[in-house]
Image 1 (cartoon, rainbow, N blue to C red):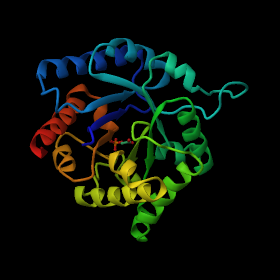
Image 2 (cartoon, rainbow, N blue to C red):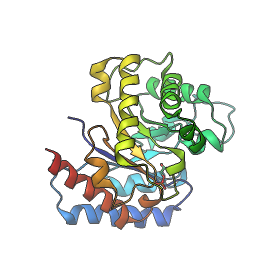
Image 3 (cartoon, protein in one colour):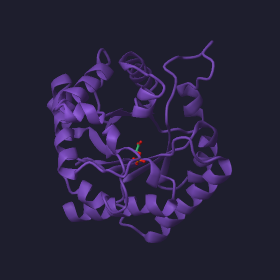
Amino acid sequence: MRKPLIAGNWKLNKKISETKELVSELSKLIQESKLDAKALPEIIVCPPFTSIAAAAELSNGTDIKVGAQDMSQFDSGAYTGEVNIEMLQELGVDSVLIGHSERRVIFREDDLVINAKVKQALKSNMNFILCCGEELDTREAGQTDSWVEHQIEKALDGNSVNSADQFTIAYEPIWAIGTGKTCDATEANRVIKVIRAKLAALTSQELADQVRILYGGSVKPNTIEEQMSQSDIDGALVGGASLKAQDFFGIIQGCSHATIHNV
Ligand code: PGA
């Protein structure tokens, strides 16, 4: 069985003081709720780089792990503005997001850059969450499936993944991110199955069956249970609702309830 994962992507939000507040409040809510430990999802928060150390310090010894929103595809050297994996590992970072649509669209990260980041993460034993997803016009043109298949193929091309522990995939339709327009849960599940089938073709059925695939795009406390009741949705990548401890906790709680219900 795949262990559910709830990851919060804080984007360009939360300075150190706010990070301390949010992580403390969240860990308190998790602790006090006494959720069944077996049903608790893996929980990751991804603060901006400058807040990672504070988040790592405060989450030490709790159920919260700390991730990063991005990283450099380079080892070190003359790359102004970049942060490498070793720097993140030194801070206790557990995993990184790669290929978020905001990196792809706003910062023009293309398939080659994303492929190089995947290579770098694999080389350095850093878990990664590889994001994919289509724009509205791609969906309206009926090209969603081939679009996400292409993104996964390009990201993994020449990179040998051989264990489901190395990575997670997040399906995030761009039109659902930050818009409040959640993708219908059955449709998200259908696309996730397409991604899993592609992964099986690129690697093996066994690996594809074990890799977690998340849904992302306007996930809220009141959407998570339906999402988690789907056969192939293994958790959520959460933006807006990860910025408030109550909301993010509500998603964790909903995910736990669905896990108890599904077994
Ligand atoms: P959202 O963002 O939950 O605010 O839609 C999701 C994401 O960008 O990962």
